[in-house]
Length: 378
Image 1 (cartoon, rainbow, N blue to C red):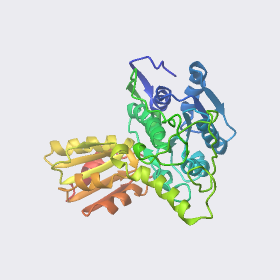
Image 2 (cartoon, rainbow, N blue to C red):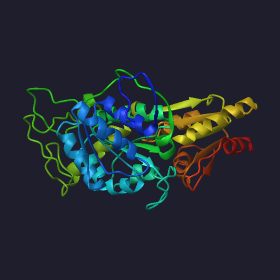
Image 3 (cartoon, rainbow, N blue to C red):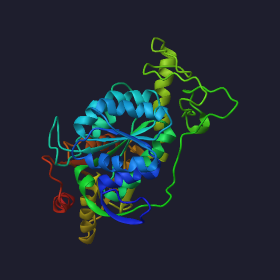
């Protein structure tokens, strides 16, 4: 466990790959509470953080974990926590606080079956709406969904970059299968890294003023760098002072923190397309289910069926325009997922063709033959 980040290629599990990605991205603070099936991430970070001059804290619970991330981020750290469904539920108020205070941090949720304590050792994709709508109020989260150990590494790096670029909490939704699958992972020596942009010297600094040149995102100074900064969970003006009792500046803040995400969907979105240019049947999948779906689509192609796959790697913001465009020649869209059909609802909202949900419960994954048979049905 905890292979060296200088190694070019290693065989590790997805959770270890997530930790490696965080370290490559420059993470220097981890706070978390052990929970199956995410505990290996904390184990790797506990071992490695002291070696890179970082800080590891095992917190008393997930409430403390997310709030520690917020403080660490404002202190200049790139901060990470890892959890599963029950812990993710406890973090939601803190995630909302991070969203409104524009605090960059990364949360990895290794999904298990639920609700409540659910199925600690089984997989699911049941937290996708929680990642989008879990905290109260209007805000726009960024949610990434790896389907392999390699993508767990790559998308964790990307999560930190997006978090720093847009000053938002970013969730990486892996699942038990991705987290515990051990496979070959190529570790880049020097991945592209994005760091929050400090305010220009000699200019007035308004810590919550959206900058046009940054896509509506503020400059970000950290505590202790000579600026007066008020970080308040109530709606605030560009200085940071409370304006929750005032309509216009409150509306301005909420609109801006949503627009900085929605206006940059093309930059944030990440996906892979397979044979969608002429597909009559399109399968849309994400996470571990996408690997099964790809096998099914390739089998269908060998059988002479014009099938295609949209594999989402960014789940939210949802790429409406891309999905609409890539299903333009299709008559059917099939959405297999290990939940009650949550993302199927998003697809139905976007496209005008027939959409079929393929839910899966109980901690079991789809198998290729199931999706293949669904593709064959006229």
